[in-house]
Length: 144
Image (cartoon, rainbow, N blue to C red; front, side, top):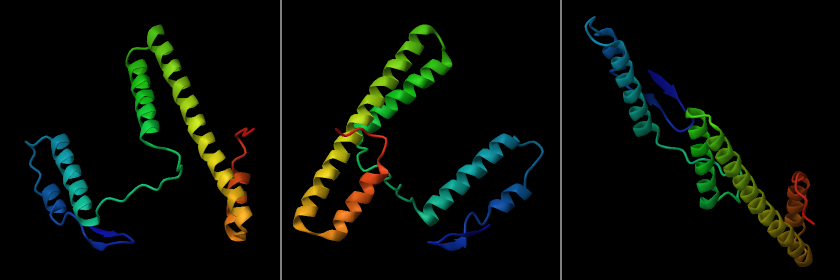
């Protein structure tokens, strides 16, 4: 199987087709496909490596990640057992997470505005306009 990638061009799982061709009737097809999937993922990871995720939100830190994990756990718990206490817990956790995310985002935007003001006093015009354009894109927050 040839894989085209911007970082690598090569062969992944060269014996993968041989595994499928030599399939016996007595073997469990689900187990074979599971092993096949694991082998492909392992080969791809070894060959291509892992890519770092792009950070779209610079204000998102480890504390936000914990709130996100709590929210996912509460939602999973509610999906497995949708009773009133789990529903209330989910709503409370969502509220706390949303409030925390909003506060973090607001702190970041205020710091960015302060940085832009400082940049305008130093008269670095290019950085000033970068900051202004960033602040134009953030329209959903009330800063004052």
